[in-house]
Length: 181
Image: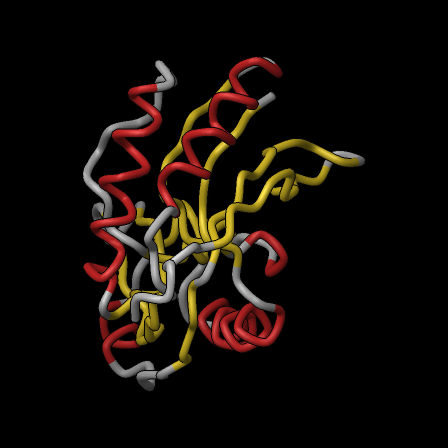
């Protein structure tokens, strides 16, 4: 199984971002992600078996203990890499509010001896890969403020269903803040 841990987005947020992506498609070509796959990645794990999946679930459960819900805003589009071959994404404002959760999750994965991609965490929502960025259009895109309340993390199975890439949720770990806000 090819797995990753992330933050699932509610339907209403995915739809709003999808509407923004439809506008961006007209001025920024690229390989766009299907709306139902929008998410915020916390840890990419890759291929693992059922024993590994069980260990990941334990790590997720450990990471959310004491975690209060986190409020984020999704703002404007941005990109990583070179403009002629970029990853187009929606920026997540206040993403540093997730750093404590990210650190606990990474430590818990290490304790469970689960390998994962250890590149630095930078929350974003990928819209397109191999995008050719038009800086004028991107800079003039109106800033949005979509409010997102995060109260759980999700284990996703990345798989193809009838030839279409899907990110299927297979486990959720809800936050347990023990009454501390």
